[in-house]
Image 1 (cartoon, rainbow, N blue to C red):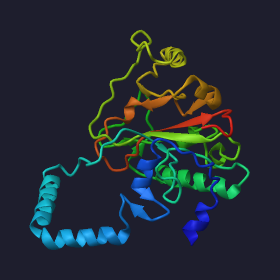
Image 2 (image 1 turned 90 degrees about the vertical axis):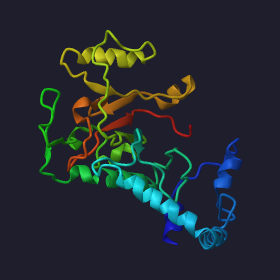
Image 3 (image 1 turned 135 degrees about the vertical axis):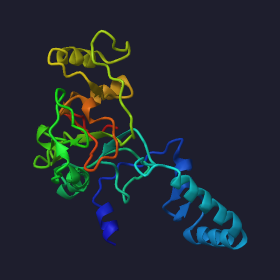
Length: 272
């Protein structure tokens, strides 16, 4: 009942049928409680039958997985993805969607999203002896990791409700923990890709003077030209990318991936 009440706080957009609707319904049909065309009891029966009639195959699969995992060094994580963002829709929301939608006039609705960001950023505010202040001139010493400065997030702070209440939501980008990966950065304005957005090229040129160009640069925009009009101007905090001194990730205690807060100055309402 509690989850149902929380879900009802969402501002649900009008249903829109698309070409993927059938596939999504096949993955999860909320009306019939079917996942991949089967109910929970049906899956339970299938699992029981599998275990009863194919125990040797089941045990062999488990042994293979255990052996595969034991061959990996403990220091190396198994899951190595790339760019992610927060907040993402909670489990009781529209989980198959990447949309962030809410009613700014509804404090409970706004609170759902801000609490998700609070929870994600919580480890960043906790003290850790192994974290040190870093800069482009002062990378972390051996065995140490860099702090992620939450006091440099501009309008994207907890005290400001991450600007959700002001209808200017902040979205947090993060590079996940990719073991031993070192970025090949664009650190001079003379070798930039032709397709790189012009405003980012101009930004990199301004950073050459202060020698703050060893970055994994970030540029956000709409999929279509009309989308950019709806999105409006964007600011990035604390920088327009991820400083290279956070990499490589070596599974050292206290490490947290850097974040970039993307602040939408004047996004238009009621557009996707």
